[in-house]
Length: 204
Length: 204
DNA sequence: CATTTCATGTAATGTGTTACATGATTAA
DNA sequence: TTAATCATGTAACACATTACATGAAATG
Image (cartoon, rainbow over all chains, first blue to last red; front, side, top):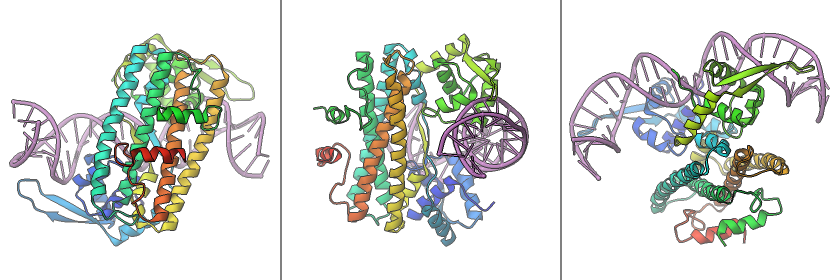
């Protein structure tokens, strides 16, 4: 058992960018791989035993003391090897989707509420993301070799996807209101309405 | 312990649409909540014990026999109650994102490969989804009360998101090639380039 | 006055994956 | 002939969440 799991690689990735405490890691990993503190602390210990990490103890006043973890050469080595392998398929778990699946059996009022709730969540997400993006953009030394490049493009990705999902939500709200699917129908980018859709997205 | 988890509700949702075998459920749940057969069979037994489901045994020739599960009134009741509650936050786990996080430490060639690999996965997904969408569209009785409505809009959502992610991938490839971020910069829909971006998306 | 932020840890429980087990039929 | 589809199940293990435990400082 000398292997580590995906969470382990996520930790190595974050520490490869800069040394962090477990507490900080929880925050930095949020964009990439959300994790609870109860999971990260035992993992850090385990990884230190495997000599992939080391820590130094930092005493603080007014705050609890902390451990700052850094990646070792051995850790960097296995991270680089892993980065070259092709990633496994993503896992998405989302109660909202399950509820949408059953939307046909829900009264119109509740369906609307469900989708509107999603929209307001997406809007909150987008507001937070634009703050993160703006923050990174203030540090002018931003190029593809910058340690912030990965985070930057990931925030961007999340923003785009949230925006697109919001558009989808609005399309669904329209369908629910009009009670038939004979107008917009497909968004497959290859059917008869494919270019019409682009116009709808832009609100023209 | 009289509660069921999200997977349980996913099963109820699928069976609310139509009675299925465990084997079929695995396929139907793919859009909403991917699950392995090793998890679904014990879950079905558990849910039948709670009287949320019932099954009938169907003998087959040339194929293994099967159990067709249906939702009970009790099951329908707790599903409807659950549908009215607001969904918990989604969980996304994606090794690709972790690798992107560390993209700054990878040589250009490998970064390109990583992103191009993602693009080809997305394209495969999109092809499959458009088949699913086309299939549903052939059954003409499609309105918001149709039992296929939920699946239909979910396929649509997945297609949109895949398409948007592909656009993002192409943006990233451009950044890697040009090695600086001074041209497109933000896609926050509120900065100086926000409308410029829409033009880029349309390829004008 | 209550909650959030800082900061680390363990224990119990719940959930998910991989591997084991079987086996006929059909399509590439 | 190799793999996929059909079809169901169990056992062992790996991974994740919730709850328990502590406690000062800052913010609303």
